[in-house]
Length: 116
Image (tube, rainbow, N blue to C red):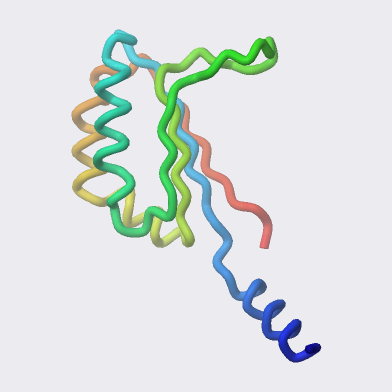
């Protein structure tokens, strides 16, 4: 049994630390929100290296401390910084950004990883 536990601990220690890519987008015209949501859901999850991709809108749960002043939110997870870099350079990501950038009022991007 101790050998199995040591093997499990070693596997956990060797597992990649996920990188979280958090993007909040405010559109100049919020009427474009459904279209942007659909395009993100269609194009981003299939990019190689994307471990998970969650796309959504702000939700009001009555907490005044929560900032819901954006139209589209994304949380994309990558196993490695290399996967993230490949995503940034992937033609589907580049094309999506190019198509929507003129329609943004602003964008906020936050990338983080838990400590190893």
